[in-house]
Length: 177
Length: 177
Image 1 (spheres, each protein chain N blue to C red):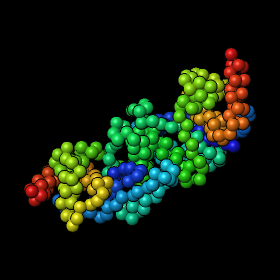
Image 2: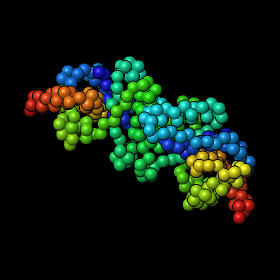
Image 3: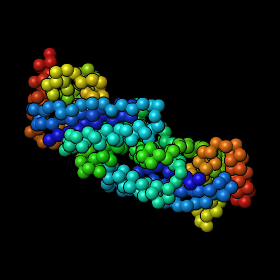
Image 4: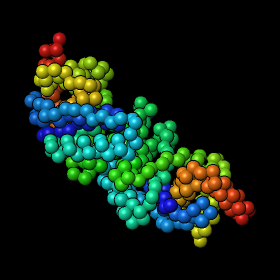
């Protein structure tokens, strides 16, 4: 299965594609779409939509994992983040791709084993899980990959897969020490 | 000038087209796009986008007036309202149409002379300003027309137009008594 993870945002939108099975995930692509606050909201959304479409055309994921945004979060940017999330839902609907929401806590727990892991811990685990030669930067890129990993490990909802993921996490954490 | 007013929402999205000059505004069309909460967010957004596109194709407005939504408002629906607002910004950008935001207070003040007018007062004034034979229903439809009227009266930013609007409001209020 190939999953596109999206960390939505209008200034920076993280995109990460991960494919494989629970014990053998690999990164296909990672990137960040940036738009300038000097442009109109509509132009910025159009640019993000064009980039998102280009990624979907190029990498043809089977599913999209999107961060669930709460109205109480990050108040100054919550409206634009919701707008970008809307574009992701829309793209999924237009292409018949399932869009699954994961909360930041679920993503942290899936990747690191703790729902309260900090950004550095998430980046470290993402780097190890995907056997990357260097840590993905910026944080939005790592978060998008973490979402895709979370979906690979949680999304299938199979007990066997959950167990494999837990075992893989434990192995990688011990390696990290 | 022909203006499409949009009262954004995913369950109900009000649309109203108003054209003319300050003292002679007329309604071209009014309606409400409804989607069921039983469908996925993506399917609902796609339906709203299709309807919005159909309205823009059919009525060819020169400008779009959109209600400004604040993160603090209506917390349970603020995320989906922001997503629909994003589609409106996007449609404007794709078609080269200006999208102007007006706050609820601005709209109320423009239509009724008071930023604290209630829904019944707004509906009454919209009905009179547009010389409608009956009041537009539901409130989302009246709100969309009020947005378009507000834009006609405020949007041009000309002192002459503001004066004409104030005079027209005063005349219609006195008729309403």
